[in-house]
Length: 287
Image 1 (spheres, one colour):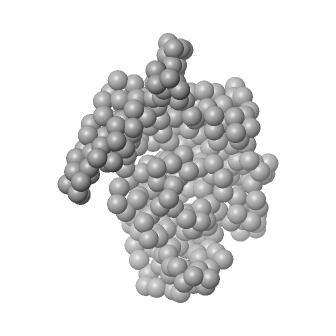
Image 2 (tube, helix red, strand yellow):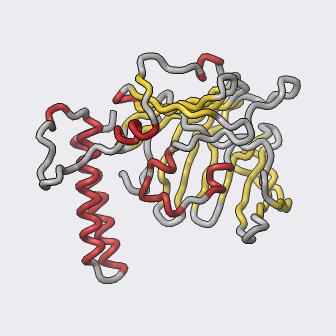
Image 3 (cartoon, one colour):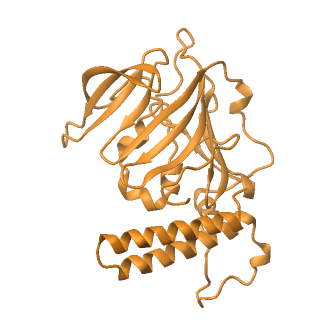
């Protein structure tokens, strides 16, 4: 489902996860691959992705229900982060900040309906080479996370006393779980093995777009200003059709919620949305 559903991981997408950057060659961290889970406390799992982290960079891939397959690659040597929209052969490039090379454009932000539940902690969490970077830290009891021994840390923002928790894996030398008030991110199925440098090379056959133009590709309008569906529907790609269908479901849900009275009625709106979204995915399977 689109809202709070588990998305199937595909091959080859990376959005740039927060990390403190490449470590020195004298003491490199081990390469590994993993599954990433992002879970919103109320709505459930937002999405999953497959991730590869190495001395060369970070790569992750997923299938977004509206945009299809997406690949993002952070290349530490080139200090770039590229987000690829596969079905439209387009990419957007950013320059990595060596101190905190996380992409401004990542899946959390593409899931716009969840944007108000996220804060800056989410963008400086997984993959960090030390817990509580930039915040006051307090060591808690050790804990097991997906069969891995971790150090549990409480992190506190001294400016407002807001706290969040991170689980640091000493073998990997990275944070593998991060939890704040309404959001959890964690790695599972961690496999420690070398990742080839070619995995983090730029992809061929994609056209570069500016940030604004790239976001325009993600805004296929469901209806024209006259309220009619676009006349060039036959030119749309399968994922464009899926997006239009999903937007129609969202519009119906918003109308339902506006008229709903009470929690039970609101839940019925969610049920109706899930059914509508499932029908969209059946009619227009994500590429």
